[in-house]
View 1 (cartoon, rainbow, N blue to C red):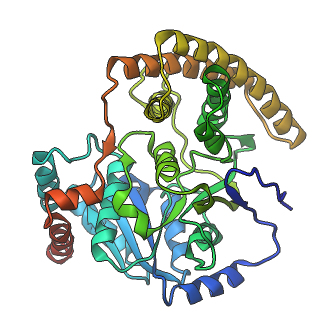
View 2 (cartoon, rainbow, N blue to C red):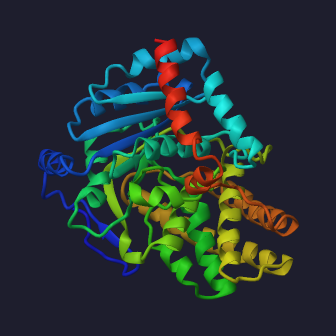
View 3 (tube, rainbow, N blue to C red):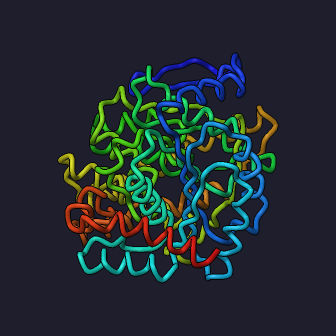
Amino acid sequence: MADFHQNGNIATLHNLRTTSTEALTRELTNFATTRKISLVLPSLYSELEGDALPNIVRELAQVPYLHRIVIGLDRADEAQYRHAREFFSALPQSHVVIWNDSPRMKTIFDRLDKLGLAPNEPGKGKNVWGCLGFLIACADSSVVAIHDCDIVTYEKDLLARLVYPVANPNFPYQVAKGYYARIGDNKINGRVSRMLVSPILIALKRTIGDRDYLDYLRAFRYPLSGEMAMRTGILPDLRIPSDWGLEIGVLSEAWRNLAPKSVCQVEIADHYDHKHQVLSPEDKSKGLSRMSIDISKALFRKLAADGTVFSEEVFRTLKATYYRSALDLLDSYYNDARMNGLWVDRHQEETAVELFAENIVEAGRMFLDNPSETPFIPTWNRVHSADPDLMSDMLKAVAADLQDYA
């Protein structure tokens, strides 16, 4: 049985194993009669060919409370788009596949580019942002959930627990963040969360002093999880990062726009595993190396916006403090794994820590060299103000693609 500890910063909703998925589903189906619930799935075409997504579709086909499923399809040509349409046709719910690489959608993004409002780079952030814009334009959902398409341990219980806190009208939560244990192949995974985010938050607190924002982030048990649910009223003003800082960026937006009592974290799975990124020490533009830089910059930008002054000396001190904190945590993770019959490769873990320490300084240098960098995609409120017809034209483009490429 899980613990029932509350950290005092945000509410933690545990899975105490005292209710069933069926009971949650009945409640959610009742809520959905007046509060429509939608799901966003940002997907690469390659994920249709893997083992995870077919199972996710099978599980979702059994979910009765979903009003709509929006699939954002990236890196697909026309034939692959047609195949994706057929692939997702197994879903009995209303669903739509947005072909992000279609000529019509490229025209939409060209309009945004001319206004200076287009996302800076392709990727999950742009995909999620486009799907949320589509959902806002539909104007018929009260709750939206987002989760990845590479979850190999997916069960429908995950979605039920994820959406329940924001779907229940008697709860105050506007944002729910999923958490779980990252365990797979008899080992503890989640290196970036364990070996970068946790120790850098400790190091930042020691280096720059107490910040409510740092306490807020430290309260999340898995801040980098790709699973979150929100009430749709907050979507038009949501600033989404286009880089690997997406998850931290959304939590920062919740901190900026909402009261702490409006945010919760919820235990959504007993175990969780998905596609693993390579460390990529030889190329900082890829893998966990790129991710660590983007996440670090996201933290520095937010703290600077709240008045923290950074310098080269601060970043050098932060690197040293981070390194010591990460090694201390590594001992804890190793002992935890041993007691539970799991495995931690200390050499690989320390190699990751050394790379992350270098990248913290690199992220600091990039921040100081370009303090005006704005990787956030403009809010949909701003897009609508600049081009009032764009969102409705996007709906028409998606509908036309569905008709022409059936």
